[in-house]
Image (cartoon, rainbow, N blue to C red; front, side, top):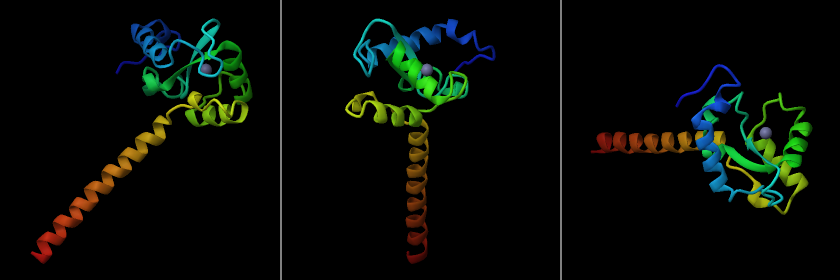
Length: 136
Ligand SMILES: [Zn+2]
């Protein structure tokens, strides 16, 4: 995965265009809240600036009507304030409680849960191996 130090640069990259195309396919080319296809933006659940490793992750993107996008960032304190999937899910639940399909995957929580379960499986396996050695 390649990312950029200069913040203006990554929006010009082919990785960004590929990301937008994947996000568009995922959300059927329309705003997840209003269903609109015109005047839409591509929003990163985890801010592209604060979470550069998730910048081009397809599940980190959503299509939003420009007005909804702007309202969300205004409520978060401005576009310069980093936000997360958790912030978005809380916001959309509050303002559009019946738009469940607009909620996003919490990629960081999912990553930690996956690591936790893998470590549990390894521990359980280690314990069984140990007991097998001791009890013969
Ligand atoms: Zn945004």
